Length: 504
Image (cartoon, rainbow, N blue to C red; front, side, top):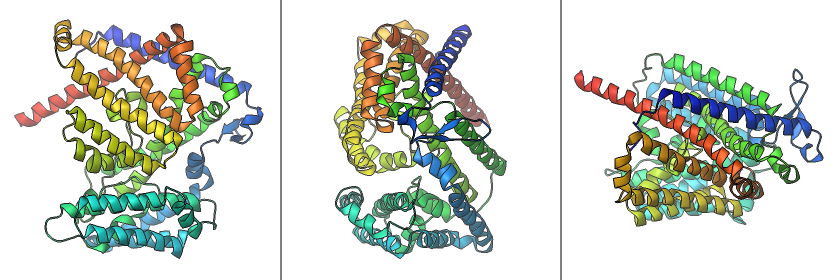
């Protein structure tokens, strides 16, 4: 209730002004902290000379961003460009065999990049999981898949496998874990989909063609086997109206975002500052709130750009890949929180939805979330921070269901029904604002550190109460109401389009 409730226009304008002012205010605190502490010893390793035009040092704390768009930019660009050219030429020649073409090019690229040992290791995982898939027992596929995944995530098995293939160049250990991890998840998808196939089995060649699609191989996203197999074997390669224009626009948008992020890194050291706990303890509450929020926004931007670049290539191959994650600013419920839509889709399809069903029964939902986050913990690599992250996000997801169930029964449902939709939306907005900061705190500990997350929590909830706590909650409430208004407008538009389709 309340999503389609309209609020007065002046109220929305007020929310916009408050939110904009607060973001500028928090940004100014971060800017001052970056300017005043640029020469600190703790910043020496992660703040390096940047673009000559700015005459300022740049925050280079995120290895993954620097790898993609600076250090190994040319190598990644060369590999993806080669794939696009090679795939396009041979697809025009033999469109019926394009899945084989993609697999052969990807396999050769992986072989040249990583060597025979790595290729043999990946193939061994593929052979094991393919063999189990032929039995057509889901529990066996899961057991074998999770055992394979554990072998590259837990000691001493991961160190033994890594020692076989690392040592040639700096990026090889990153490619090892990415290639092996994503390969195992893809093999599990293949095995589980084979269990659903009623007539016969998919072939080992189908698995190899699926696994060695180069744009997805090392860095994802994961596209489940059923979707990939159906799309890559579609021989009717027809572009939708304005599709190439949209692809070009998205590519230019990604380039623009990359440049904007690099410029921001010259002025706002949002990644380096949280790593210096001595400095962080001296910062204002608004600065800490801004740092926590901006770290999650940056992580979303990074995921959106990295997956966006890969998705652009996949779209050129006439595929419909998993879309980038939903912006953290648009999130106020745990059920929609994720930073990798490919992994999220995989987990929902094979674990969360499979066990939880329609997600309205508390015991089944509890079991579904525990199993989902158990697999996620293994995927991320078991450690203290991941355990804490998984526990709190699992709790948050279940707590939302408990609260929703509680407020759906009298007298709460009766009270809400009597107050009107607009007031219901306002009251829900207060709870959603508090929930938003729970999402921020539960996730910032995995992006920065447990110490930083605890400090932000103490300052905003306890030491900063009531002034900082309530002011941050007010600003968040304004943001939540603007998001709800966007959702309302979108829902009305979809309803109008549905009515139009029925009329036609």
